[in-house]
Image (tube, rainbow, N blue to C red; front, side, top):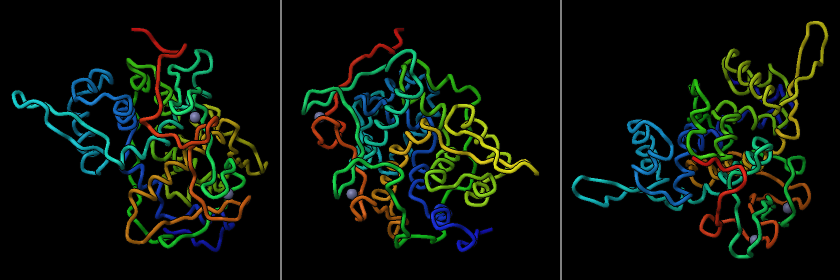
Length: 325
Ligand SMILES: [Zn+2]
Ligand SMILES: [Zn+2]
């Protein structure tokens, strides 16, 4: 059942939009393993066997995911030996464009999920030589983008009843498996926010949704799934649960500092979906920057030199939190 948009406050109404670029992005990216194998490619690992070794993932699962990414145009595959036939994978421009979202997820994991150990990886921005500090800025006025300064507006592709995923994503029974072998903050972040529903719940929260009933209607998600995801995100400190009515007892879910810090990654994923998986209807949502009044694109730049953060310009080395094997 579709939620009548008029019933809801304007921001919440926008979150009801089913033609969501984030949903489309997650449809391609799929699951935690997919993120982790992309991370391997960004680290320069190209060959099937090496990726398989580093992730400790079953060969069939890996080849299935690689195949899906090749089909989606995120990776290209080439053969490097004839006998036996062996293949390596490379990120296409569409794949490389995911870097800001991935590095922003890594940073969120560093700051909020690896506090005791320190970051497993230290990143250096090659053009300026400084430790990489990330800053999300407005493409128009170059000011730092904060969630409260962004106003979503309906774009051409708004509410065109799209192919948004309906199926629940399986979460792995043993999240520790994702942390297998290579300590990484992307993996840590994804253990907390590792499936499509959790991403979509967060996206709705950034548009101002707080109440269980609103989440349930807007996302069209089964109540038991929603209860479990909200419970997990609350236990992880992403949401704070507050009672707003005594009888009957009703609760709302408010983003904590940790939750709000996820905004950059969320925005970058939406934008990747807008740019690279657009359909004929156009962009579903425009973002207007209140500070300058313009419709903007979020750009991830280096906090020191203000240049865009590109995969090939970031160097990495082991940090204090690296796990030695
Ligand atoms: Zn601006
Ligand atoms: Zn720099």
